[in-house]
Length: 395
Figure 1 (cartoon, rainbow, N blue to C red):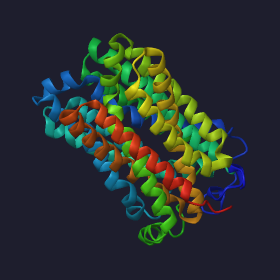
Figure 2 (figure 1 turned 60 degrees about the vertical axis):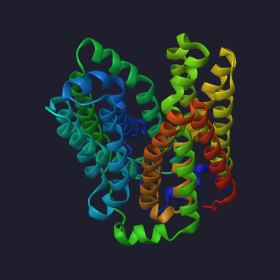
Figure 3 (figure 1 turned 90 degrees about the vertical axis):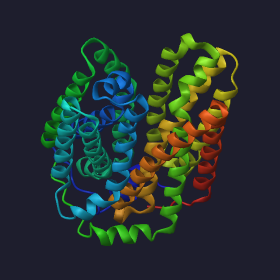
């Protein structure tokens, strides 16, 4: 199998010479900053939920829909945005999506009621899904021949946002107020929009972009089987992850903060590992879900803190290999229609986030947290079996 540097995502659909005067790290940093700002915005409600709910006059359970609404909007947007904007320069689209995130966060910050807040979150979902769908292609256009580096950089932005965003937002929310948190997210989104506009070269749309490309992509059976694998592994993680603190507190409640940080550190290692071993993409795509399943089983059965700590780090490492590996996988399987393939990957993640967290919550209330974690483990291992069975074409 060829290494990632010669894989199909760097083909004519995405390839171009990078401007000689622009170091490769500059456009990748801009893209990572953009996705980091968006993902941090997505999970902000979890940091300030009680105060936010009280201020707009709804229950905490109802306020939790602010996250679900973002995921649902993203699931609808990802496969449709290229259909609606078939000829628009992708750099322009990325910038305007970040501008939309600015407006969304400001709407939430100023929301007089839950309806306005929910509208802002729906707009944010559109921005996130669109950005995810186009960022990889824009990165490969700016830094040709380095698809694994592009994917790792984008995922790194997500990991850093996850590690730092939630605790920092919680601190700011407690000290200044929850609305200030969303104003800060709007500022970060605006800065990211400026960075993307300045750092990226123009990214013309693929000549066949639009509904025809999407139809042809959906007709690729191997790709759709891989999308099923993405749904299974993401479902497995999100059936369990919202309740990770419940599991930790059963063993040692005082260790929750540092164990959550350890999950993030494991995630950082997972991002880098997936990019490093992208030359063995089939192995990585199949192994990461199996490792996730194992980590979930160890987590839910651990009785002592040291074993739990190992399991949590492994959980973070395994799951955070998945976005990088699956992004590269779908573009390897469908190189000439990579944009549509990536949109289906994004849709799979967004659907899985919604269904996984809802299913895990139902099981948690009915049977306890163990059942939710076990569901996640079974789904993750099934995803590993799917990817192990699927051959990846040579470049």
